[in-house]
Image (cartoon, rainbow, N blue to C red; front, side, top):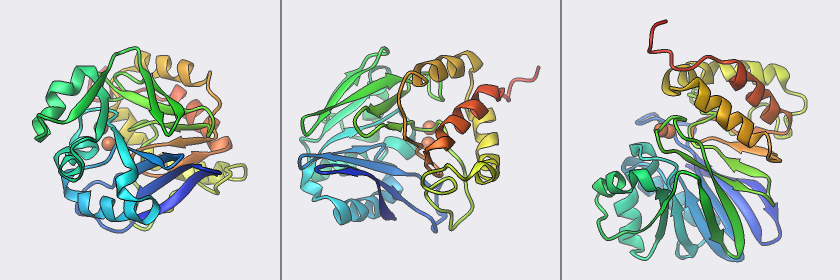
Length: 252
Ligand SMILES: [Fe+2]
Ligand SMILES: [Fe+2]
């Protein structure tokens, strides 16, 4: 895995750790947010990729600075590395959807320090900065949460925006700023279409989320698979998702 900065302003940084080349498992992006020397890892990934993730983390922050971890939902590609993280630091503070807490502990961390976030969301402090944990229920998990950083204007959006891209892909949809890349967006989104149609179950949940995030200022929309939407590609994605019918396994 490799690490690339998403946002940097003084002692406030976001990185994405991503895997372009290996195809043993579904690619997943792991995000690190660091503030004033304290770091949190968002959707830290599966058991299978833990060594690569930890090595990439060590490229950008001292692993001992990672004191918090966030899991958007219960999937194995999100949180099955939990016992390995806890073996490194048994004081690591986990933030997980309250509904999934008892299930996530099945990954093997009965003693993990865990804060269950209620359905309405909450906050997570990292190095004195307040991150907002916002609801994204049924997108795709029944309890599902995203993280918004109002200073960095980063929305970590879990499986929303996910694309299953060919090996060797870049980490940005089009150019980083996204202002010149309507065509690149159209090419990219073909890799996201089936994922959203099939994995996302609810059109009303989709509408609810779009209405919520349209209230936010977002420069970087950061999914857990695929590439990051920046600049105008954020609005392009919201418009595309708005027009997409999801829940495709149910025949109509
Ligand atoms: Fe998932
Ligand atoms: Fe995922």
